[in-house]
Image (cartoon, one colour):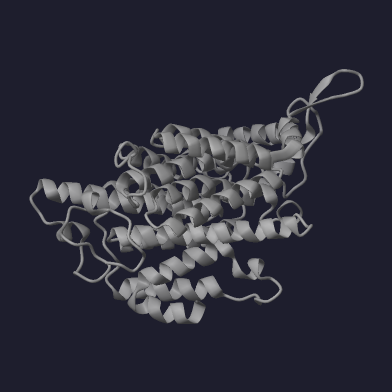
Length: 452
């Protein structure tokens, strides 16, 4: 995939983008750590597909309704650059910029390469297949007697951080299966959703469990209310409760502990989160515009006393265990708003499509795609409050699925209102990655990947 894909990416850069997304999720060196040596697999693919992107004219920049969210993502990186110019440790900021560029640039380039429903479909299954396989591997380890996710994490992230990616995948895979027209792919997607749900539960991450509940609530709100779907949701709830078991229920319910004296105290881990969040707010108040600098919270946290406890401080290197508050402390209020708006504008842009195409198994129609991405991102937005994970790639690319759908739908609507053809609305030439002249919103019926 690395060397063959890098050659293909020069001609078909979108294929290189798909491989890059796959590698960013499965992390080959971690997934197959006993066999795959450390290497620059993602870097090789990224260079090749970006060169191919440039050779092929830098994609199609007629983004339609996806323009504002994409601009917010670019502004998030640009604001981190400005924050780096004023921060205490510029080399730390530069490392942050490099890591985020590996996400932001490919995501925007990939969005410009989406020109048909087949592109959206391919990206959706790349994400679902990749995160689903990781969940399968984690389940396999768990049933073999070692809970790898809880004790070792995955891909350089601990159980709390990686669980947020799993939560994002649950709703994504469930709605993908609901939309599928091919029976075996439908049940494969639902199988992935089951693996993901169980992995969240045996991660014993309360933030992940809360995110899972939010995904369930979003699913109940968004799913077409047919008798079959209600029965399917009921079955899913029963299976989920059976997966949880008493240990998971006990873990999620222990937000407070009662001592032998009868006094009730907030559990230590929950209390530390509240204290760290308070430090984030103090940092934000001190530097509301540019923040303290990218990745500077761990560098500076030891300088702040815990409020209400004179002299008590956290050790240097401690993360805040919250994406939104820590980004506000490090990049200022504009920085966290740019990142939040990337997701929020994606969800709000898709929302008007969630009530369309409510018949199941019709393919990734605009309505099905909107429901799939909305459920996934709502779960991420809530659960990210409990973990610092700005470098987790999955939600960025899930949003690109929604923005690709929004791009196609809105540009088609705009050009149809001007009397232009659908072929013109997708931009570029009439290659096999472009749509026929049927209006996109009407012709978006699922077909096997590779069928024009």
